[in-house]
Length: 310
Picture 1: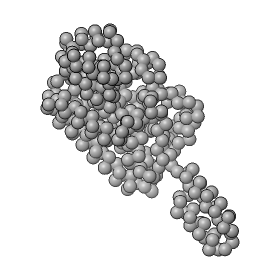
Picture 2: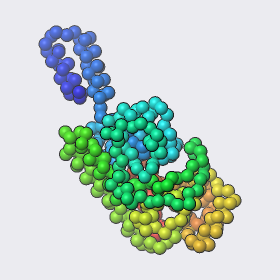
Picture 3: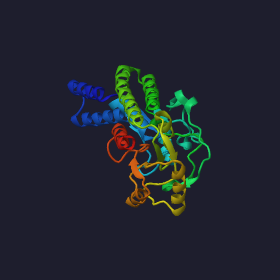
Picture 4: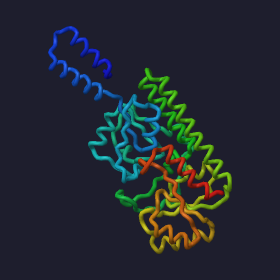
């Protein structure tokens, strides 16, 4: 029941004269509560999927991304209560590529689960020589057998958004035209990012880069980045061994820019500068960005790369 239907029923009751004002108020509250509680609900395992679903569905559905803001969603393990809310959702959006490993052991209703990257699963990037390390509250971990930040290939991001559009149309056929129109606008934005990224890198595609973390595999493959990765954290000053390893890497891979997932601490910036290496931020945005949204964050990321390739 939507809000208009609830209000109509109350008006009919009043016009019939067979109900008191207090009873009318109680009926209205109950009807509105029923409408709110019955709203179509979508749960997602990362922020990009939440953004895509919200862009496509607008106010038609409630989109929930429950991961805390200070945690990497790929490594997060929800508690039993949160898993229960996932199980009750009308639609559950997964990223694929072994992202959010907790879903393998949770009993999620298959008919409501959508693997948004299924369309290009034959193009997942296989990882080799995994390095175990620690960052954040998740403890020691490796980044898995597949690279999973698929949305950093903006064409893959458009494919993931398309999977969401199709799933929503199946579940909400009455909103088909609205959902299709919203998807077309989102696809246009994502493909605009794709073209812009190609033009920026194309200014000097062979320029070597170092990434602070191995999370840019799909970005590097799609846009032909000459990229090597270390395992550094933006909020932690690297230890002596890490600096030695970087210097050895720079002997072979003569990068003059290090790309960070987030703003690095000033001491890291200064020490890198002494080595002739500048810092640039490119946020993967697996979780909610500190400002703006997915689109504005990616636009800012590409703008940050312009001095790197000029």
